[in-house]
Image (cartoon, rainbow, N blue to C red; front, side, top):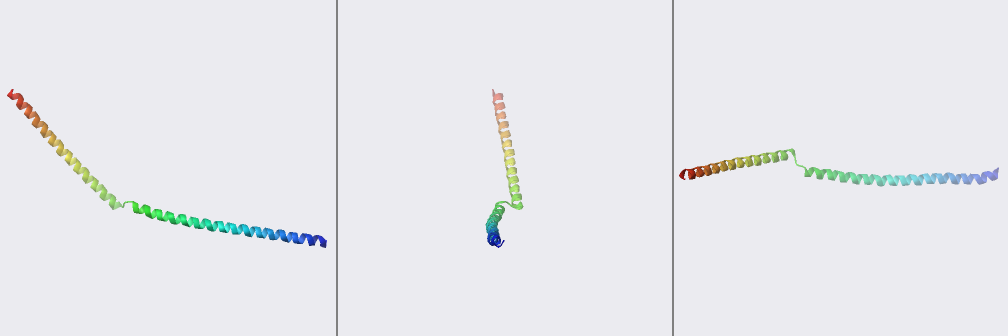
Length: 108
C-alpha cells in the first residue's frame, strides 16, 4: 500500500500542479487579450470623438442656413424682377414693330 501511495502521490501532485499552472497560464493570456482589446477600444473611441468634432465643424448652424435661405430668396426675387422687365421690354418692342408694320401698310 505504501508503494502505491509513493507512486500515486507524486503523480497526483504533479497533475494538480499542471492543472493549476495551465489555468494560471490561460488566465494570464485572457488578461493580456482583454488589455489589448481595451486599448483598441479606447483608440477607436478617441477616433470616433475626433470624427464627431470634425463633422460638427463641417455643418452649418441654423443661423447660417437662415441667412443662406434669405440670400437665395433675394436672388430669386431679383431674377423674377429682371424677367418682368425683359417681358415688358419685349412687349414694347413687339408693339413698336406692329406700329411700324401698320404704318408701312398705311403708306402703301
